[in-house]
Length: 189
Image 1: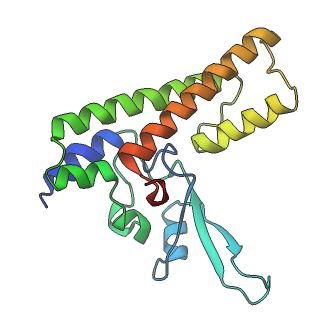
Image 2 (image 1 turned 180 degrees about the vertical axis):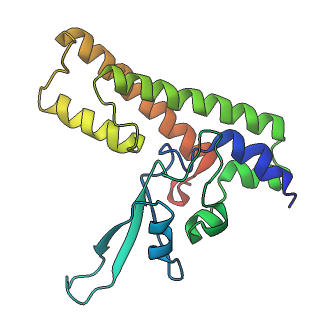
Image 3 (image 1 turned 45 degrees about the horizontal axis):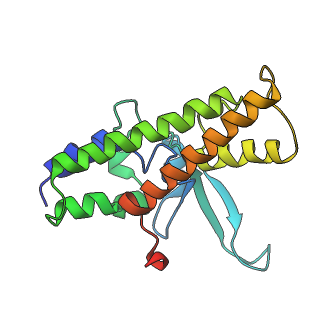
């Protein structure tokens, strides 16, 4: 595969690192947690088994990734974790295999980034401003507030519920696009 393809697509996209596609990234055997922590990744550890004392600790780091720069480059690219190193989205694979033209893929990326930005805008309008948290977690937080009948400060009830409905549709549309174009669920078909 040409090295130009990642530069052409990935550096226009970043959805796998900016909290749009994933909530977090789990480290794999061989990933150096201490080194990644020293590079600035905020790792969280949890025990994966039934026994809290004998089960191995699994480390994850949240998305958006702290190593993602504004130009969509990775600050720790040479030392990035295994999952990051091995992940290729479905759109990237389709372009690499000749199934999608690069120009068409760039259009999909632009449209998807616009959808994600619409979700971010609506979240901010509803008072959820935690930009360092994945979109799915931010949406769940807002949903829990609405389920509890909490209306964001500065909005009347009708406007708040209209915005929440708009947000719900935007999240659904983004999720559908992510599932079909970037990260299909193998159990869907």
